[in-house]
Image 1 (cartoon, rainbow, N blue to C red):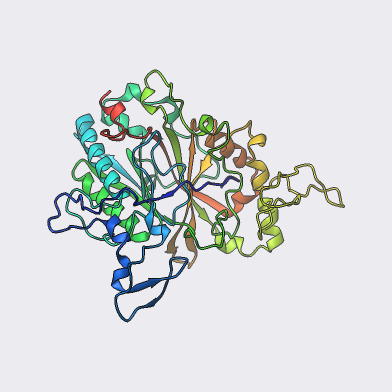
Image 2 (image 1 turned 90 degrees about the vertical axis):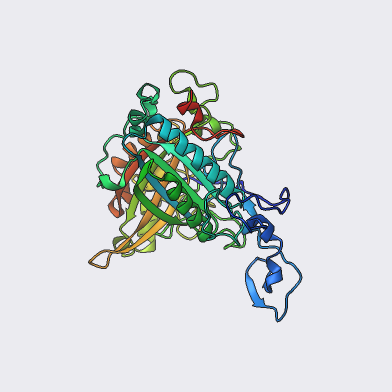
Length: 433
């Protein structure tokens, strides 16, 4: 849980919609989901200024558009895949598949072609090309993003071992790991995010259905974040420990952002297909909340190195104030403890190592003892995991105060190629190159 934050680059959708359904295989459906954004008010639902339902009209009211939350649309085609630099979404699904025996390179290409077409359609607020479930028929795009990546085993099964990047070598072992192999790794990784739970579930079902006999599900994890608009102004998210989590995330406007997060466009050699792509490290980190919540607020703040109320460093100032690592109290002790999580994860304490964190919280119920199975689905992006996640995690492994209250239970590393141009599918440069 590194000390970094995310921008929100989503834009409203619908200005280009002609209102005509493009739903293939769905006769009789003359209205697209995007068209419904402009007609929802005709059902009699009256929306408040913030987009929340405040009452029902006794008769059909004048057409009122849905809130901007539902209308937000991310683009499928582009230099980079969606779901990397977009702001945190309210609902997410992480899922991996293993290629079926005999699927090979040809089967993998056909699968990525299907998946890319489905992702493009759903992200635009349209129905899937195959028989659609109608789960999200009356919702907008809701900032849906679908992101695809390849695991280490994908390359052997497709005969492409020589094109597997060195950066995709397995992560080293860490002392805090208690990994469940059944919920780790995988040949194909899919990240789905949206600001509406039904839109996210709809995409998940479509992706699973499209897999057909080419790939079988390996594991699935479900996450959530604060809903956009839940606070009066944008704020850094809080995790399930109640801490503001993500203050020092790299930002796209920074001069070295692309260098740290994306593989160079001029990439050459066996892994030239990764140009403009990124590497995603995925960790299921269980928070030992019963133990954490026994600490006083002051003790929790010393573990993190920041005030719980506003995320400001213990050395003073506001959330974005630079942390003074040398400041001492009246007794001569460091104000920010030497093993505080925020101190250890600072880029200037790790040779400049940085990663773009885009996590999800999760809660999977309780175990037999009534202990909550909850925590963080940690997802971070970097141009090279060895100089990003691995560097920081090795430092945390040697003395992070937070390690007593968390447990790494699942792990994965995935090569996420650059975005698909119009008419292309994700991974085409690898599978047809």
